[in-house]
Length: 452
Image: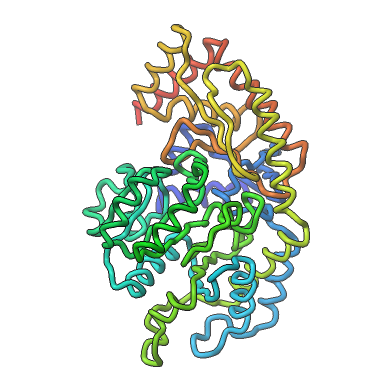
């Protein structure tokens, strides 16, 4: 009976939620039914074990279904206390805010709680305009900040915005890492905020050039623009430190968090900010509720955040990610050395990117370019498919750079799982470089795509 119900439930999803998503997963041979998920291991209904090297795009820093977080949430629910009463002081929100502000350091002393990274970006837009009296916003090219209208306006990649009408006016873009272009824009004094990812995630796990973020912060101070860091993917020890900004000695005006703060169980986001920014919005009694959200400060979300930070710190997962992540990238470099279609392995902590390059040899170059003309994501997606289908590894190429494969496992992943990824990717790349079968499979994928 269970199998029949499962089939009906999946059919209901296809009929009433997102049929195109189902078709895409089917096309990629990645439409698995997951049964039990713990740590980095995802057990499917048919008995396979898949290693998660995507972490829900950096949601599962503490691993899937960590028992201590589940226990904390269960206790919170069983307490039958106020969750979203909306007319009381949510003490657990104060507890979580205190922890987040103390860990962030610098001028950060206030927190606003949201339910997602996108909502956090919208909050940062509103607060920066209130604090500066300016309307303009400046962002980096190839960034990813979310898919609500304001967040979408801070992204220059047309794939995400096409068909949704014009973006917010007054948004400018500069190349990530170009300090001179940044100064020219900031010198106009028209921007309320500069919004940056300290390490670009969907842009290809792009680390900032030496001194760039420090200069960006200095220029913001000089020209009266707020320095806002989007740490939705890089925060909560993903890069080895509590925030990626701590690698660079930064002291921003605002920091946006979400994803991993949830423990992968209850949506929660946070915008951390200075007292000055906060007071520009909540400046009087009549403005005490001028920016609110129904689910902000709800007790389950706050408990999830507190418990997640406790797990990450007591299990020293940041320190673990910093050391093991570097070893993981070094093993990848060794395993992939000599493969002309791999140009670089880069990253920080457990936030890594394997960068593909155009092959030099004529035979490979002709095949590579042919499939790139069909779709620029074709090569990277073939790597993703083979890793999943043949080696039981879940990952994905970066959303704004199809030539970079993301490797972002939970921070408590087993050493053997890291080794399995290295071995699997080495074998897949060997096939890509030496076997006609790889390109034949790509041709079949292209043919199936054309029929849809």
